[in-house]
Length: 330
Image (cartoon, rainbow, N blue to C red):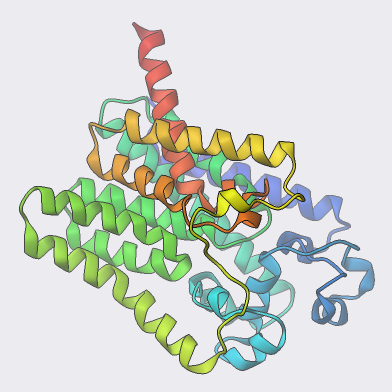
């Protein structure tokens, strides 16, 4: 039987190879790891040179880099195009900011994504093993987080910490779990779905004080930091949520996008069903499924919806693979 730790190390090694391949194919420029684009990223063109920045639209990783580059100067990051809601996802950028600017920061951001993928795989494998599944299904976390890791967005580290929190919660180590949930929330606010799931499980057990403590203390770091950001930075004018936004999907969202979105929803449902014996995981999948009701229509592009749902997708993939493995063994 392969140990969950070794699966985590394997996942980290695989994603490291993938990131190295991306840098190699882009002429050895680490800036390729944040998926920059000349059409918007004037500051990056000035910093790294026009030859290093392809002529395309950039993606969110560039904003993470700019936040890290300027941290803790939020106003300077805002001037470089970092919106307020992206500043609340500060964990990865704040750690990478230690390395100053330029390539060291880019490599630090990528390294943190690798760590996140490794932690996610290790934790999900551990949860699978503890509940009678083949631990290899934890490699679903690698598959689910490969895209955000390849473009250096905040999901790998945030969701990895959230899964680690769920693994600690499964062992009744509530203090460690709460700390991990709190850190995950600073990486991406939707990672707090894991903390909500844990609190609901405790509530169902009639552990009311523990449930309140986990929920409140997990959310506190995010709430404090978000309040600080809002006191310094103007709120974005573009909507970041929209109830029943899937009814207003723009024409630019094509057939491939819709197909992948449907598959993502299917995997979220699979996660709810297949982890029904592990309520914290089933509820986490359900919360990500519920979040589909408030995404803006443009979020359903192939590089958006599956990425922000990656934690739920990982649970769905792992749960489905676990069922297949069990039936095959029989």
